[in-house]
Length: 269
Ligand SMILES: [Zn+2]
Image (cartoon, rainbow, N blue to C red; front, side, top):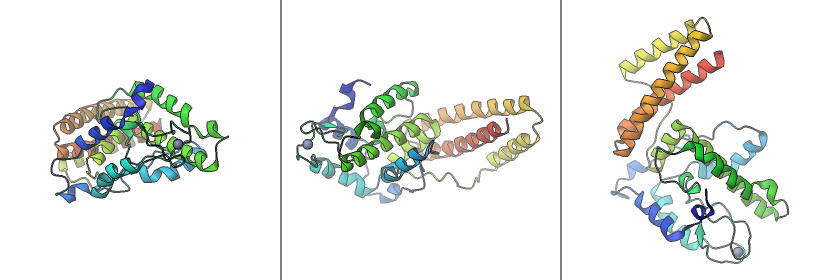
């Protein structure tokens, strides 16, 4: 990503945020329920990563509640450098341009903002890795060892948020769940399947996995699941685009299931 993209002028950033608020906001508050268990952090790679996840939990569950959406604008206005009180010229506000001190995580910035992306399901995942590395170069805690403890903590929080953002946006399923979450829509990935057709299919696939005699049979199931994932991923994309959130949710339920089977198959291979 170019530096230019990272430092979107505040006015543009705020405009983008405001346009993402549903038109009936804030009157239909039931739409703004958000489960904290919705998007648990992806499995940690190292104990260091696990530590990093702790401070990230708050923003890892972006609360698209009335309160947080409302506070986003006031937070922005009040968000001055904690050290020299300069007003930030850009967002995300990582380092103060005046005194170079590292800033705390801005909770109003979502994962898409971090990578300068529009809030779309279809994104160029392959471009994310480079952007992610650029971020890590700037804010990795190891690079700020000469800073104060407070700033090192801020850098760790920033780093954790970028890690969460990268992992969430890279995988289609977590990206889909996150997008709905930004719309204030809860997806319960443990929800019981009630569609009889899907139930029958689940039973059939489960049997096939159990009965698979060799890696050829397992690979066959895996490629079938990948096909289904692709199909339901497209269904989600269309449903999300047309703001048909019920359909988007049911696509997520199917994607969750097919991804689980894919994981099970991978374990057996
Ligand atoms: Zn400053």
